[in-house]
Image (cartoon, rainbow, N blue to C red; front, side, top):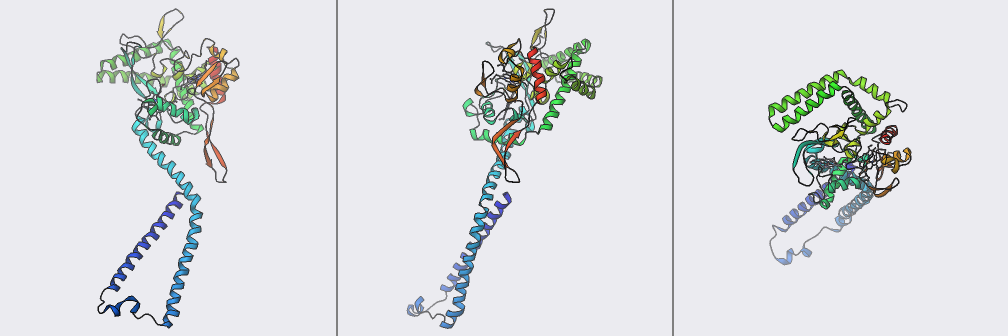
Length: 441
Ligand code: HEC
Ligand code: HEC
């Protein structure tokens, strides 16, 4: 369609050029004609000049005028219908052209405003953030906060919900970009960025592969945590990284990071990917005694900076690895109380943060039956919409099932209108496992 559009434009330009050249030639000869005349006005007046005789007038001259008239008529007769025939194509070409242009322009603004935190192409990243004391604003620690991948964003949120997040930012970490939140970008600039984001959304297979990679990584962390020696060693190395960072000395930072890297390489060999993958498959069976661990791995999935998990919104401190980050006094930024009543580094998993507390039976009273809870997690909340027994949505709880966007209609090769379907982030089996885990907490 774009081709059709430029072809029509080119023909237009050629015709225009021919007309202009013709005009110049006409003016030139006209001017020549008017020169070189001398003598009395009475002989030179236009109506006194001898003209063609009748023979020529009735044959050559007449034929020429008729022929040129006919020629012009046929040009108009062919060009006009052709023009109208091209009209729908031009219209579609314009729409496609606009989308293409906006995608390009959106890519530029994304690189400029978003990629420093969300990674190139929205692949996910992290950002240095200062944790301060509520009330006093005193510095507590500098942490790396994950900025989720945006390559499956449009399956979890509709475009109005995304616009809301862009307008107002999120939790003081993600800045406000739109004018309503005091940000620098106009509504149109935000729309253009969202048009670009459509072009980086992954297909269902890629999303599922990423989810599974995250489960394997989570399984390795789980194996380390079950081994007292390894987990003590890891805690020490993580502490070393924090101390080195606070010292600000490049040598120390590098050394601490390389020690942690060596530990990761060693545990990578100790717990190889294929074995972990097989274990994840095994515990995904609802009859397996570790089925709830499978649900927890899905809940805390770190793949693509937490995009497919729940912990980043429902667990305080998870986004900056708060159980392994330390304040200036060397205390972990998040602590829980163990069986012996001691405070130790850890998360109150699902204990609530940006999203509500899901533990202590709260989801059981919100959703008396598991299938109601599964249904809610599949579609997420809407702004102002009621859910469960007494839930009031803000539109910020994502929907993890497939999402159909009827505003993004595409025409297929047979001329049928197709609504845009964004593939699910999590399968129904995966959501069922998460719900079983949540309801046990
Ligand atoms: C300074 C770093 C930073 C910049 C710049 C930034 N973001 Fe974010 N963004 C974040 C963080 C961090 C989060 C997660 C916040 C949280 O944990 O609640 C986030 C969350 C989001 C979310 C919600 C995603 C989800 O799945 O919940 C969207 C959408 C988003 N950002 C889009 C953008 C776009 C588009 C831009 C550029 C206009 C942008 N961000 C620029 C840091 C940033
Ligand atoms: C981007 C942040 C975010 C993520 C990620 C997220 N949630 Fe939520 N969730 C919320 C918010 C916010 C609410 C409260 C409802 C609202 O404001 O719309 C909520 C509400 C809920 C509720 C209802 C709780 C109640 O008592 O009202 C459940 C259950 C829930 N989320 C489960 C999940 C599960 C399971 C996942 C992961 C598959 C998840 N959430 C991921 C933000 C999030």
